[in-house]
Each structure stands twice: as C-alpha cells, then as structure tokens.
Length: 289
Image (tube, rainbow, N blue to C red; front, side, top):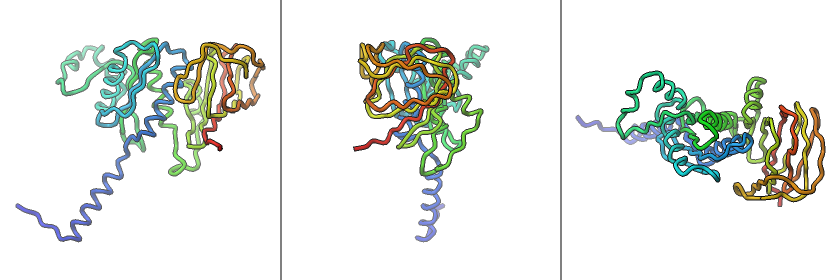
C-alpha cells in the first residue's frame, strides 16, 4: 500500500521529524573538551602515574582521545572499550564488573559486534537527562583511580552550564561538597571557570600561559611559592606547563579566608600542604589583546 502526502502534509511531517531530531542532545567536540579537562585535572591533582582518556558519543564513535606520558601502551584501547561499554549499556562499567564478578560470567560471551569491557573506569555522559556518550579511563594507579578520574570528568561535565541556556546557576551545598571531594568543576563558560579543589599533598609547579587563577581558601593551609623558575618544565597540554618544583620565587603562607590572585604566565607551586587544603579557584579564560 502506498501512502501519498500532500505538499503541506509532507512539509509538516518533515518539520516534525526535524523537531524530534533537534530534541535529542548530542555530544559536541566542545563538550568532549570540557570532559577531557575535568579528567586530566583530576588525574594530575591526584598524582595519577599516567592515564589514557577516551570520550565517545552515544553510538560509540571516538570524539576525543588523549594519553598522558608514562601510560602503558594498551591503555588507550582499553579506555576506548570502557567508554563504548558505558555508552552502549547506559551504565558505569563498575556496575557491569560487579555483575560479572558476582557470577554472571556468561556476559563475557556477548557477540563480538558488541563492545564489552566490564572493567571499572567507564561512565556515561548525560545532557538534559538523556545519554549522549561516555568517558573511559585506563592507566591510573589502580582500577579505583581509573573510575575516580572518569567519574570526576562526568561530574564536571554535568555541573557545566552554558551561558545561553542557563545564565543563572544555583549550586547546592551537597553538590559543592561532592565537587570538593573530587576536584570538580562547578561552573564553566567561555569567560571563566569555577573549580572546587582539594589538595592532600604538595603538587607540581604550574604555569597557565593564558589563564589567571584566583584562589579563595576554605580550609587548611599551605606554603604557596610564586614566581621563580620552574624546574624540569614540560608542556603537558597547549598553554599549560608543569614541573617538579620552583627555584627561587616568593613563598607565602596561605590560610582559610585568604584570597590569592595569580596572573597568567606566573609560575606557582604548593610546596607544603597542611591537609586537607580546600579552596575555590576562579579561572579567567577570556583573553585580552
């Protein structure tokens, strides 16, 4: 049987189809870059020896893949498998690993056309309550750290509003508490980011070539060194430099209630930390001339 539509009816049908497609959010490259930034930030602040991070869309296609130095060779492929598994099953891979370890080993016999890597470290990504992809991590200090990095990346993405869709954002105390525990991003726009950060030990020396950091210390204390020369400096990503320590510079003791502004291009290093050091970071990302 053939169905014939008049031109107005056909146009209405196509418009309805387009509206339906538009209502399904997708994972953009910009989205993936925010997820990646959350993953790498958590990995570096928690002393991950290395990590490979894969971000895929809902269909499992790779949107972004990055491998830190000193990561073992198979880590990128494993991270892709974790991400595809989380995307395909709409579940964190930690849940699937528990199912397999609980005795349902027949799940490992799924057809080869189905990507199935039931190892923790894969977490789905959602936009407006709908699944749009997943992030997978491999190569951390442990399986648990892989999972922590992936979850921190997903949390940072979920907490990220856009200026166009949400010009006013309220973040509950519970969300802030979770973000502080995981070093999560509270807000991210083209002009600035607000991170909730925690340090339990000294970190690497850092230089942000394009970003200015403004710290507000919530608890704990630390010896913060600014200026001087970064030793063993390497570019870990575009416009970001890390090193083992700072030679020279000025040391300042910071405590709860203190505010510190570090202009872009200035080396800084938390040399000593009285843990837990918890603080907000307002990071200006808008570039002047």
